[in-house]
Image 1 (cartoon, rainbow, N blue to C red):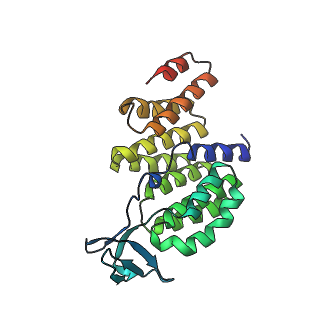
Image 2: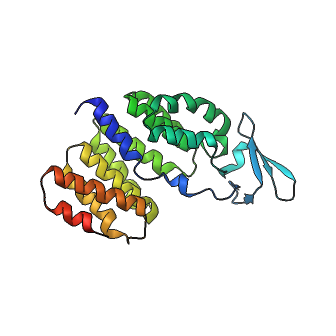
Image 3: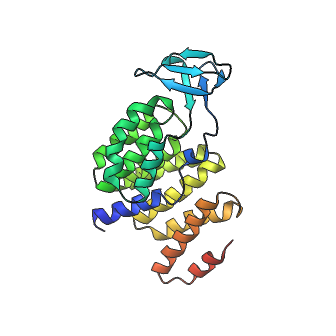
Length: 248
């Protein structure tokens, strides 16, 4: 399989289900290291990462970066544009947009998602070193996208001929993850197996997503699992592909 075809498979796989951050962030808030949670009207950051938290009362409280555990703010339009660019296979546009988006939003809870999107775009272009730098940057500043970054890094490890290391990474995710995160790891494990040419094991991973969760749970991930498992079986002329397509 040539490198650009494999890159296309990785990119397509990453976009089959929405990243977890797309399902979150209904409110704006800050969690401090001391456990305090501050629900805010608006949060802004200075270039050093210190935050100005505007409370509902109108009072603005300055919180030093060293005291911040987690920041959650509405999705910026720049991130939405990067998601759409990646979905449209416009990797160059995503890569060009990343520096300005990071400069503006990295301390507002969007370092991880922006780094993930850039990493996936770099991987699609075949620049594995740049992809690795992007994923590592995202993981250095914890937010709500660690799982997506770890799954992206697992796919990168496959591209680096480190498939066994990728599977170990995903095993650790599954062992510690609640169901909403484990289902993403199952599908990523399946993609890793498929890219390694281990189609039978890939199908078994997709079946975990299909069988361990109810039809109304994680519909995007289950739809991906059914579609990809059936495709792998059809590639082998296995009649069980029809059985999977008929599953609820």
